[in-house]
Image (cartoon, rainbow, N blue to C red; front, side):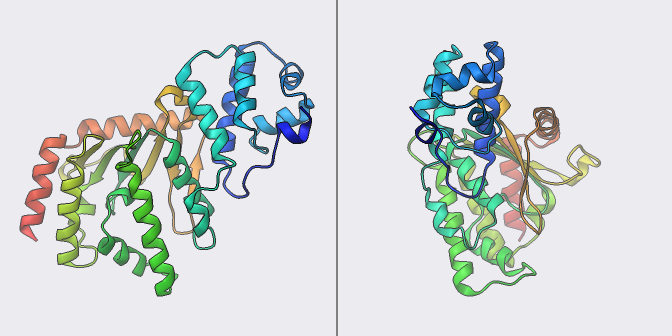
Length: 293
């Protein structure tokens, strides 16, 4: 196999998945006590090519990932499936690529990660989590954006959100969502009272899904570990060192990928869910808020 066959250019744009894959392959190679030159011989390519794979600068085919994992003696089937899926996703054109002209690259990467991830741990302060938003609620959020959007672009963003939300109800391994929502987000009547009543009812209904857990962080907890703002932990339980944190801002999303920093966010989330109302009490709380509107 020559270099061109073993290392093909991945789809342009987001690269978080390639960096995840490269980091994991590097770790497994080092655990196997192999040099980059040793591993490159598996793919019949130069060590520089392997370096670009491990740095997330180049894509690598799933079959080559299998060969590398065989050489590294990685027998864990879950790890192999996850890494091969990440490799394939770098070449497969997902539905989200049709919206690349209107979406921030970081947001596109978020959607792609959710397509291959197994769980998301999300903390929100002022908004209902995107995966749980209704169309009316999201339309109000989009309409409040200072940049302003034309109706066609608003429609496209609504379509993207609806497609993204299907990850929660897909037949094969639906995405597991555990969210801690601050009380402020639920009392903020985004879109007006009717839209917020609909949103709270929708939130209550989705929380009945076996793969969705909703907890409310009430005002009376006072100071808490989440004061620095919202975040989303995108997880791969069988390979936790692939977990990343997504941080959203006015100018676009960014990612925290360093394992020690990701672990800090995971610790914060664990503390938040420990002090938040239980899932059962949270649903009762949501019902009371809706009745009071």
